[in-house]
Length: 100
View 1 (cartoon, one colour):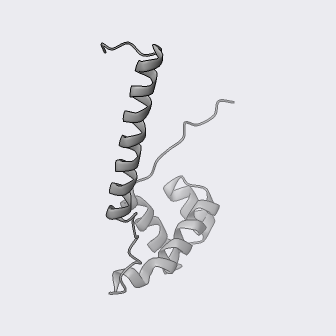
View 2 (view 1 turned 30 degrees about the vertical axis):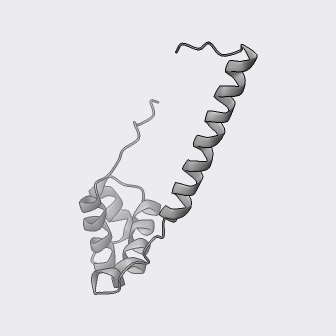
């Protein structure tokens, strides 16, 4: 028996299957057969849909805070100084050629 290649489903397909599961017109087994997906996958998509449905109706998702730009610039400056120092030290020691 050969294994089936891993499939990546589009968000539209997942939503379609999850909405069909929420409606409850068919059983999970029927939906799994209709859409050719495992029943556990349908249950997962249904749960995700129900948990995140509030986002659709106005609740804004939590904004991810990235690293502070000022901190990143300070780190870049520090690393630049370290690289310059090491380059000079290695050149003096003869371990780094003057030409690149």
